[in-house]
Length: 138
Image 1 (cartoon, rainbow, N blue to C red):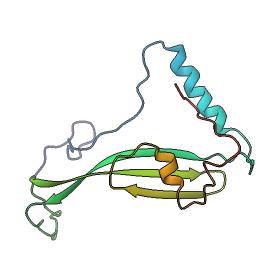
Image 2 (image 1 turned 135 degrees about the horizontal axis):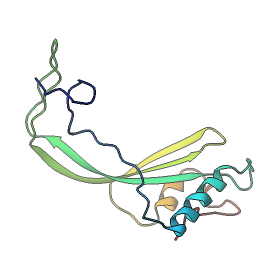
Image 3 (image 1 turned 135 degrees about the vertical axis):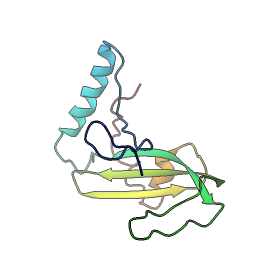
């Protein structure tokens, strides 16, 4: 049984965490770049200049060394803490929020030119757009 959380009486879950952008103290440059990103999202839809967002994350590929124990009544699935590392993969997410479109691509290896790698198979629609605006670019 877990110790209760003093704030709400529920169980403490130390493995959970929240991530968010912590701004530098009193940085006008940071605020400028964040406002630039928000300005891009306020633009109207234009087919010649589509708003396409790209995000990339690197993930570890892990495998269990022992088979997990199945869940039962009042018992969660149990996994051993040991694992075997099976390399890394990059996950690319392209989305056009004003059109309601998204595309996810997983690549086994870290590779430069993530947008070009992602755009293959999309007919070059993203990279061949008339203009590319990088909001918040440094």
